[in-house]
Amino acid sequence: MSKPYAFSASMHIDAPSSKVWDYLNDLNNLSAWSPFLVMDPEAKVTISENSTGEGAYYEWDGKRIGKGRMTISGIYDHVIIFHMEFLGPNKREDASEWRLTRDGEGTEVTWAMSGQRKLNERIFMALFQFDKAMVKNFTDGLRTLKGIIEAAA
Image 1 (cartoon, rainbow, N blue to C red):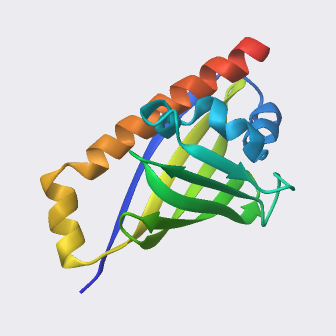
Image 2: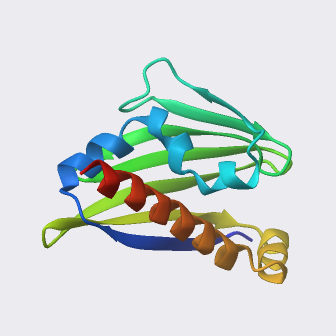
């Protein structure tokens, strides 16, 4: 039986949400701050011709990070939602989002992931502390994002 899971990481960025939004909404920018490409710098990345808005996608194929595709499936007030397809080595589909919240003069960015896990996946993820590692990866990516956006301000 499948059960839901969710985890997230957040970071304050000293920039207006409009600036952060414009940067995040263009998937051409993702490779500059992706924590997963740091782990697998030789991974091949393909980005859709239209790299912004609903339907835009970012594909990866690497030895360490596997193969997958994230597609912008929804854009709402300060939230970009992705349909995540992990194509190898283990196939699965999940949801991810980048959520922006005004935080004083800056922006709180939350990177979240959720989905359903079968019993064997829950056991595997618990043994290898997968969620904890992913929160660290998300935090590392958000820290890099913060540096890029604040340096450009």
